[in-house]
Length: 310
Ligand SMILES: [Mg+2]
Image (cartoon, rainbow, N blue to C red; front, side):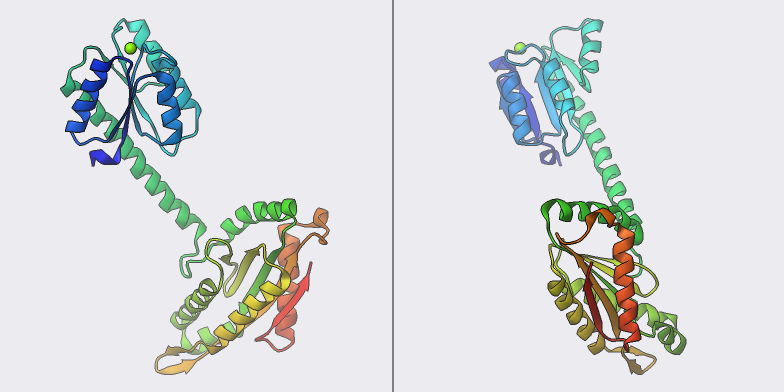
């Protein structure tokens, strides 16, 4: 467990440095040792250290400056900083804590006390990690459709704006596929809601298998309606994806209470590129256009793809 939290040690005094290194390595910590403040901060910027033990008085940068510098940069997690000082008057300690130190230790230090202070730091770091994990899980839940695992509308609204901006800035294509399962109500009416859910999950799997991982993304937009966003994909490329989805959907077979059935889907595909009048563009106009195309595909007999550039 100790090795999960690498420690950066900075001290200009070789004897203290050795003692720090020995005390902590003996207890299983991974340590990196430097002999001045500037090197410490340089090293810190190269690699993330959740624990820093720094001397106060050092050439280059002193302990206070290191604290301020570390607090001033963005880090991937919290950094627990312990200042080593021979000063123990109250005012100095306050200055150290104000500069961003979490704790301090007066020199000459007691190895057992140092280890205890490091343990306090680790408890805080572990708490921070578990909070972060819980937050990440909540975040995933808040943007995911529970049944299908696709993104939900909350996420779509949030992500669409930057996607449009990026496409506009780099003059990239951005394509949108809107799809809807045909006669879905009949599935629920004939085979029951569980069968309906099975079909929704099955269709979402077909979509997620057919799109590029981490580039394209799929949203469950409504009951049986899905939207797929394909960045840097032109209209023809998006139409190929839609056609592949259409075929896969039509070929998929489901079974409910011994009866086999299939469900087709209809698709509206639109895209924007440098010819698009960007000024008038919004998420709503894009969705609306894809929706119009989708309904044209429905009117034309379903199980088909309609496309048109925006
Ligand atoms: Mg010193």
